[in-house]
Image (cartoon, rainbow, N blue to C red):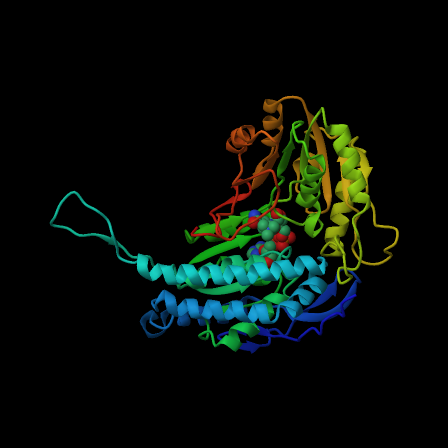
Length: 477
Ligand SMILES: NC(=O)c1ccc[n+]([C@@H]2O[C@H](COP(=O)([O-])OP(=O)(O)OC[C@H]3O[C@@H](n4cnc5c(N)ncnc54)[C@H](O)[C@@H]3O)[C@@H](O)[C@H]2O)c1
Ligand SMILES: C[N+](C)(C)CC=O
């Protein structure tokens, strides 16, 4: 088993340096796999948000913006590439920090850190490319006028992020914002902020101009809400729950402040009877809902099985679920770690007991694994005999819980897939590629996977429809 990392004691990263929160408060950091308190993080309040926004504003305006906002894209790219290089140098340490902070398996944390570095590199490339795209002429039907497009950074952006992929979700916002010439205040989740604070240390090491990125940790209402309502924050990019998204949108609306919202989901995965390789399909279904303990916005947590393969598929799924290695996430070969917190553990258990009391069958799992007496662990859970009015079908669990329904026809499958207020993602698995394309067009979601579930590429747009939010991240978007 890997040794747990040393937890640094950090302050808030404001104006290029570290400072204690004005009110001196701190929040304990609990390793969810052991329930031990392993450190603490600063608890910022509105006073600290003022300082962070002021630092970001002055970095944006400094020397008429020539230091950052109006510097060449190539200048900004140099810093983004330098950050990527440092992430790669520290990958093992950062992955261990992410593991003990979030409970995710160490191998998954390493993969996340690879994605973090790749994301900074990708946006370095886009920043450089931006130089060549500026002043793009617009063709006009007359000679006497000329017109062109100049892409400009919006200003100071507030970036509020969740705990499920702590540094990766922050990077999805920080890297493009900085590439575009914005300055930023990042507020990660109070449940997992350690790696985001290390990003502050990396910015210091690469000499990122002071105030370009400020990182403040703390509780949502104390440190997040003042960012959303701040008159000198020009845009909010938020990833988190639909409930918090609504609060943020309401606050931002008072100043007609633009927001982009990446919210929850209840995504379907439709599997047809023509799949020759059932095991491969089972593997995608497992990965689609159980990786990161199901704490994935796009988890394909509603599994739709064609009636002809349902029984065989479920037998295989249960067999696979029984063989998942559930352990301390620092252990070699761990495939399912703990969930993030006691609160999340209890919430998931409540979802399972409500499903049971509403008449669903817990085909597998539903409990704490017997060999783990401590830590917030939940078995991979498969629920059948589900009706469309049940809570387990309608609401996001954000845990290792998949619910299953059987369909007879393609149109029934589509109807069930779209039977949700959410619209983040969906998937279809079939050997008939024409059918896959047809279904991908009619599933009402921002992302549809064909013959897989969850691969996410930095080059492609990401984001949802309906109550999963609006706006797109990644790629040029
Ligand atoms: N669509 C996506 O790409 C995506 C990606 C990851 C997670 N998510 C969603 O995130 C949710 C899980 O994350 P979570 O539990 O951290 O969500 P959350 O809404 O509880 O918290 C998200 C962030 O908002 C902050 N916050 C809370 N209350 C606030 C307030 N009143 N004002 C301002 N900020 C506030 C939190 O401190 C945290 O930093 C799930 O619903 C999941 O689907 C979506
Ligand atoms: C796309 N992904 C899985 C990295 C983040 C969503 O929670």
